[in-house]
Length: 326
Image (cartoon, rainbow, N blue to C red; front, top):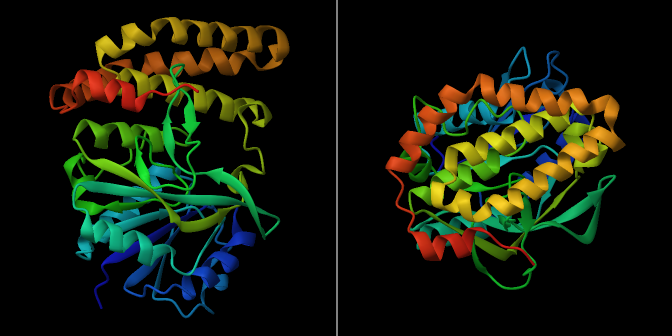
């Protein structure tokens, strides 16, 4: 049976969360969906946990960790092959309110200019629901860092799609695709949500925040609880910095770059000083982040030309809308 929505779950070291997530999916008030679990663990540890679920469920086991974006590309391709209309890119360390999917699908059905919806995400702590806000979607700081929206009670348009549990309109993803690639597979982890937000905005797709769509997230579930930049190991720090810089090179129009240059230079100086004096043993990760950018520079600039030359962004409104600092 065909489903309008494919819920894709990419798993890596999150076996302890899967059962609670599946239970929340089983109790959804919206039923026209199929679950696709894509396991990035080298050794299969979850297929036995899936057999007791009453959901319509398909399991794909990757023998290596392909990263977040490449794994979800498998799920998105599967959604297209099964003529679905929507794809939910779901983290495994989530729990959804029973009306989560219904609220989002009803909004997207009625608002064809929107490509995705952000929801009100609270924190899970050791599997227990809290009322502490985790993420609500948002904007970009002028120093090119993610800024969570401070407006939590009112629905409003946003720039950035939060990567925890977005539902995408598949026709919008087709609008930015290249050779069955929707998320950029060069992003192993981090900033893939900001990159895809940029590319959708370049094509004039809109993103909406719906406070009535509620979920809970165990922050850092797939990275051993290391949810802040400073708590991550040096490999993850290097990956984050590399992807941040590649995202700017790919998506930031030249006029925007010039306006942001003072903030970017101050930020870069701060990062350099952090690794030089506070974490000198990790300085190699800072150097490697830039070396990896230069290794991919030609490829990144090729992608940039295709993005910028077909962009529908206009100068004044979008600049004020995308970049916020409070």
